[in-house]
Image 1 (cartoon, one colour):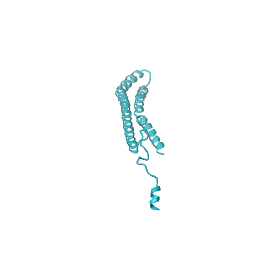
Image 2 (cartoon, one colour; image 1 turned 90 degrees about the horizontal axis):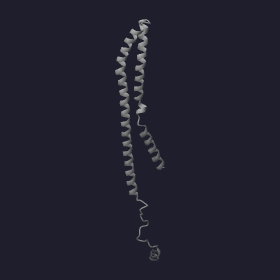
Image 3 (cartoon, helix red, strand yellow; image 1 turned 180 degrees about the horizontal axis):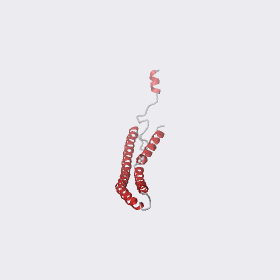
Image 4 (cartoon, one colour; image 1 turned 180 degrees about the vertical axis):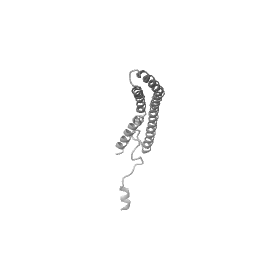
Length: 147
């Protein structure tokens, strides 16, 4: 009876149960592709960060130059304007009022240059916005595909 049951078992073909076809990649190939794509993504993100930081460095340089120009021209200009303005207005107004008017005008001009320079050095404007947005999108896509 055991011999008869043994003979009645279906024969297993020596061929593999599933052929690996080019359109059906193996697990190792999928992991290899995943590693390559991840490496490429990290490399591209790093390149984007470098490009954005280079762009922000130029922005910082422009802001610093504006501040320096404002200070270099503002201080002597303020002095000259104070002296000339005070001397000119003393013919019409009291000397103290002449000095106040001229000094106030020069201070406003210097303040404008300083505010422009400070605005260009704002930390929010220096953040790598494109990279941050790209990283958020990559994270969202990874989370979406791993569910």
